[in-house]
Amino acid sequence: MTQTSLSFLKGHGTENDFVIVPDPDNAIELPATAVAKLCDRRAGIGADGVLHVVRSAAHPEARAMAGEAEWFMDYRNSDGSIAEMCGNGVRVFARYLQYAGHVEPGDLAIATRGGVKRVHLDKSGDVTVSMGRAEFPEGEVTVSVGARSWPARNVNMGNPHAVAFVDSLDDAGTLYDPPPYSPASAYPTGVNVEFVVDRGPRHVAMRVHERGSGETRSCGTGACAVAVAAIRRDGADPAVTGEPVTYTVDVPGGTLVITEHPDGRIDMTGPAVIVGSGAFDPSWLTETAFA
Image (cartoon, rainbow, N blue to C red):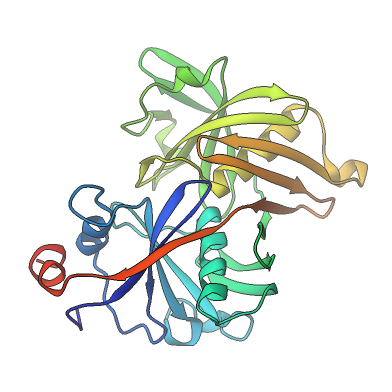
């Protein structure tokens, strides 16, 4: 760690919450142990993950994207592991850039490990993120809770998802631990698992175990995976009909609206809120978080 204290902000998107660490020059080291301490809900600030805000040109993993996107979302799960993408995180990241005066409302691009994401920022309302296209890896997958198992749709949104349609969201159990899945070869680095029920026409609800974070109140890439899985299950395909398809996805923390376009692009729209800001206590930072 190159400094003894640093500023932070707290934000959330449909109650998927984040510690935001502004670091334009990529001068702050954030080892996994430090991230886990920051996200600890009793001994730290508490969050589902950390949004490390860095200029793309200053980060070795993002320099190639600097021509398209000035800012890089260096995202970390609450256990300190690195993730390719976080849909709710992108919305909150964009809202922070506006809050800090780095961008104006309107269209912008954000670099992530899952590629450059296009974002539209309303002045004070929802944020829409173009999440890219879904991929459907081949092979059958099952997920389990206790003695029960369900077939799951394998969906990749820049990160891996297993989407299981169940009778009740209670079927997911506590989601304290990652639900077992098979075959293990389907997800060599782990997977986000979504349990889904129908609420009405083109309207579903979900619970999710996020890889590296446990059950969260919302998962943006998960909501996209759920929507496209439901679209395919229901026999719709925008690429075939030439018409976009929109699904409403309820998550424990709110509601997201997901649209798949005929060219495969998926848009996610939902809220993003900056809750407040502060500074880490230097002694806690050095003696506890980074011990």
